[in-house]
Image (cartoon, rainbow, N blue to C red; front, top):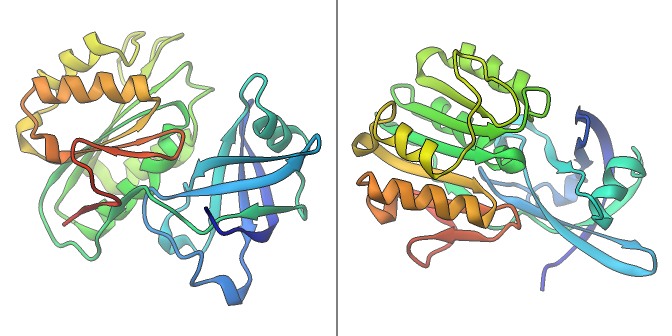
Length: 260
C-alpha cells in the first residue's frame, strides 16, 4: 500500500482544452522523499462523493527543474480527471504518494547512442523528462520521438517539444502523427497503428542502431508498437514500456527499468 502525504497545489496550468498540469508545493522536510527520476509517476488521492478516489499520473517535469508537476487529461465520466480539470484550484490539498516506478535512467551517462521514444496522447508526460535527461547527459546521443495525437491543438506540450527540438538541433527528431488532421513537418494524416509503425521502423528509423526504445501509452498501443519493434529486429531487453495506468511493463520482469 502506498504512503501518502498531503501536498498543496502550487500552480494549475491549462495545457490544452481538456488537459491541465498541476505543480505541488513540496515542504523542505519532504524534498528527499519526493526526489524523482525520469518517467516516474505519482498516485494522487482525494475524497469525492463520499469515497476515496486514487489515480496515477506521470511526472512530466524534469528532475533538475526543481518542480514536481503532473498532467491530467479529462476523461469522459472520470471522477478524478473531471474534478482535477474543473474544480481543483491553487491552494487546495491532495494526498500524494512519493514517486514510483517508471522508466528510470541511470546518471551520469557519457555515451553515444540512439534512442527511440513512442508516445500517444498523455503518454508524452513520461517521455518528456526522459528524453531531456538523455540528451543533456549524453551530448553525442540522439533521440527520435514518435508521437501520436488527434490534432495539433490536442498535442500536449507542443511548444516545449518544438523548443527542445530547436535547442538540441538534429539530436532530437520529432515525428508527429495526427489522426484527425494533416501533420506538420510534411506529414499526412496518420494514426499510430501497426501499419504506420511497421512502415516507419522499416524505413525512416533504423531499429538496429537503437540502444533502447521507450513506449508510453495504452496497453493496446504498447502491444502494437512492441510487436512492430520485435518484427523489425530490436532485442526484447531493449524495449521498455510504461502504461498510462502507471504500471511499468517490460519484456523481462524487472522494475524499475534502468538503462546503463
